[in-house]
Length: 186
Image (tube, rainbow, N blue to C red; front, side, top):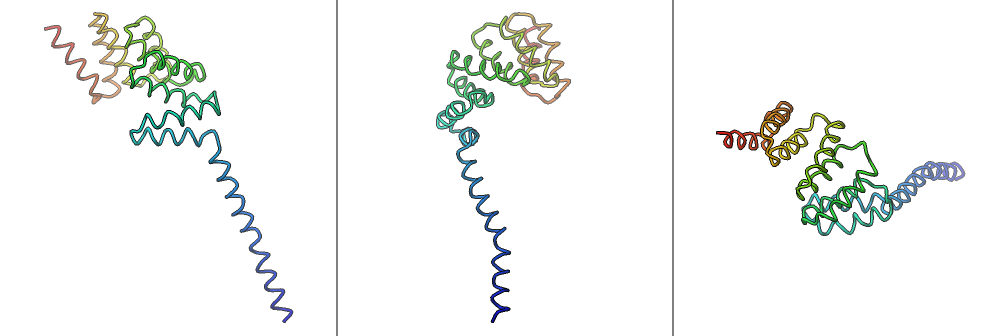
């Protein structure tokens, strides 16, 4: 009988590391659910499902938990931009840009707000900054071309669009605007 009892003890002893691992995973999962990124991740998941209005409270929770979460501020800016709430979009994009000057997305998004307000002198330097950070982005080149086009500088717009198409020859927005420029100069 004694050997069986010793074998049983060894069996339980082998389970201790497994039980410890399970407990650790449970504790870690609980911490993740309460982490500053849980609300952000939930907000982004809702955005991906097209439920931007439902995402906004989660993103606000994320920036309340971590005020330096530039991407959460950016996502909040996108929501305001889609509502055409330019003042709120500007504040949120500005916050994202101020928190992270190394992202090409944040100055570009802020520039879009200024372009909507026809404040091209504010938009253009931000687009140029975005291109300094990410020179191979056809979207930013096209946005810069649109500003030139709207300001009546069509040769500059055409040259800028050619740069965008040099990066991505199939970039539809640049193709359409270049076609529109060609039709207007005839």
